[in-house]
Length: 481
Ligand SMILES: [Zn+2]
Image (tube, rainbow, N blue to C red):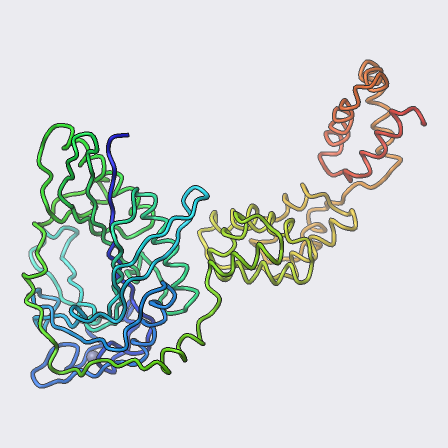
């Protein structure tokens, strides 16, 4: 391994405030008809003045606190100047010289190891509009349409230090960040709808020859999977260039979904190209200690804290706790189930395997059943009416239809066989058919018991009560007919 990959991320988070960053237009514009949520401020009309949305500042401070940042009492807005058809003002309002927060960190779990990723800064800015190109390609379109609904939608930009050393770590970081954003209820974190956007800077160090490639910026990675795929592609492209002694251009590249490659978009701009200067229309943001304390007091339990508590309180493995805490709704569901049922590990097993698999297959993030369903399922198992295998078998139907387990059993006509006579009969038959196995058992090879249990399960299609089967087999083999 003579190549080391260095990745830093710049992540834009769309905030779920009611109104835009500096005007009273509504901020949830994703599905609105074009240009219906606009006003003189967000379309940059002469003389229109911006006013800071205080919820936006509060949301940004919440994220900063959750990411262990220093939140500054004094921050300020600046103008970033550039021309683009979706930016009618000719500049974007952002925080460049005095961002609201700096120097934080977030821990990620990489192969069961905790890795700390430092956060360089976190600042507030406004979004630009959207261009809709006629046809499906920018280069072939004859004209483009401008939708200004998104102009002025509040964003938080999070910039990490280059602490990530693989495409997988980059994906894990963004996944965990989305979890935190959802816990805080400050963003939908929906990548497909652009509420969470990730750009990455990647370079590779050739450790034998001590050469570091130029940094390449990769954009347009609009899902967790594409973050990993695009960066894997780019990592390999840079390593190949280093191997062949070629120069790696300092540039911005985009992920081309249909061809699964990155393509060059433009040379990378330098920060000085933007001619930043303080925004003269907005006074500095002052976040007093009292205000910050008040925001702190509204913070919910965050994923890392929840993992610790689950491990401590329910004595489940850290791995289980981490999987459950990835989604607040699932974590809450788990806790509600355990409060009713007990059995923290058994409940965690069922949720982590059966329920999460169903959710993945149905491509849904919604839990369509209640803790009542799980409670009934466990009661049926406790009473010996169904086996764990049967519980697993009917789980998809319970989850998909929302029917209670007892109703599903009735409709399917399934009952666990707890009829001792019937089980005895099957065991006796098996003993007659295979006297050798009986002999083996009696001469001390007791693990042969599994063979007889298996025969009963085969005959009853897995619906026999496993505890009862075990007891009967043992009793008959030990000769006490
Ligand atoms: Zn507006």
